[in-house]
Image (cartoon, rainbow, N blue to C red):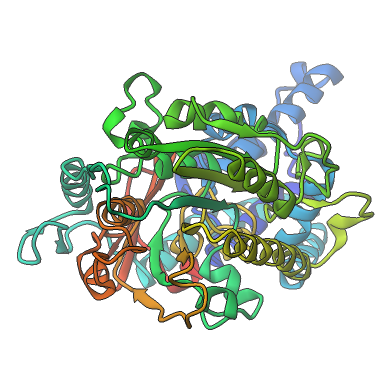
Length: 538
């Protein structure tokens, strides 16, 4: 047999993982880590070890197993689904990867990493002792921490969505009850009465903006941009952290919230759920506008399959891109220029009613101005604030343009999800696989534009109850039934009182978060429910 070979790198690997576990950045599978440690310290038989190729093979295999074990212990999605997601969506640019890694490492992590590396080299002569000590730490540290801070799991009492008195004994039943209740909720659209003043609808679907992001750049709902909305949602849940599911949920908003798997079942898209098909059936001419080409993540196909197949696409013909998406391939165009193109097209249309679905991804992580050098080295907060200012400027100009037309318009501002400007021990910045409330709770506004409202001070009506996409569909159905621009408009206080509530449930690829009382419960790849700590939620 060859001598025991336990290099400083393996000391560092296990010590660093224990540190990550202590700070909550990863979980720690005691059994698998002990088995891997045994595999590492057991030397190869001499007859095998004398062959350089076999030693190299074992070294490569050890590195692969170490990385797989680290992934297994992390909060990241299963490696197969994570790889499939990247394959379907497309790989980010090298510059974005640099920016992402810079955001992951903070000074404390760097100091600890260097310290642990030095310790690993100092004890390199004591191979057996260090291996035994590591084995003790691998077993003891997780057990001690879990006994001190044991997470709350099933067995608590949770209120269901149907009645306050009805309770279930575990989160799984709560979730089943939630989806069962949501499946029964459908918004139906009636033909507008002839005497109702017609109005257009402009839905502005904005990527990467949550309440948490606004807080990070020092902005609140008291900002003049948000104060201009007649109806303002302060507790709106997008239910997802990614653009693909977000657009599907918005376009299927006639129905109550459905599971992630259900909304991605392309073979069984319920026609009654499709908002824009319902709007077309009551006389609305549909349009699509994007500040991008719609190729990334198969975005064009998603919106067409979900009720916009017959919509007129506003193209960026003759426009020059102002920015580049995080893949360094997709050109991004001025939001105002694209919205102005739709406005001009709409002005020449004879249709009495029109509806626009507009999507902008300019604020997505990694998007950068054309010609901007070393953009990946900029402070994320400053970069986000800079881009958001441009987006707001364009949207304000568009609103003034709509006012100038004297045409009645209902404008809806709804983010897809948050940017995740900051991370935590649970999930790093810019990563949204775990749909935390800091990512899915977004500011949503509805503005009434037309001669009846343009010269009046806005009397904003706050909708603070938990809501989601169904509330927007319901609101539009009530506006069409009784136009807010006519004499039979529904009183705003009635709107606020009657608008449908949706309890907080967010989901992405098997990762689910539910809100119950003052707690948020998480279900991930371990197939267990845990109560998220304040540190994990921040």
